[in-house]
Length: 120
Image (cartoon, rainbow, N blue to C red; front, side, top):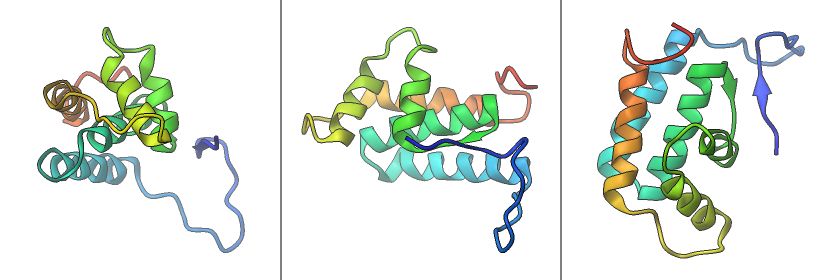
């Protein structure tokens, strides 16, 4: 599992410059709004988790790593566990739709200016 953090990383020659944080947060919010209407519940949950981790820790990570990070930060990890099982191919079932959307909507609220991020 690879996790990239850019806060202290040196830029390699020929690599892309880091986009501004506000642009990445806006991109995550736009992606989650799209996912709410168009993506599977597993995608909704895991993409919300990775957006949340970026919001809190300034870390860009995979959906799987974001899910693992978020498990200990929620009251009920069942939708995250179901999404991780689905993503790894252990189970064909997605998490329940209502709980998936609730997690996604919670992260969207956190991404909004004045949201619940511990970094603001």
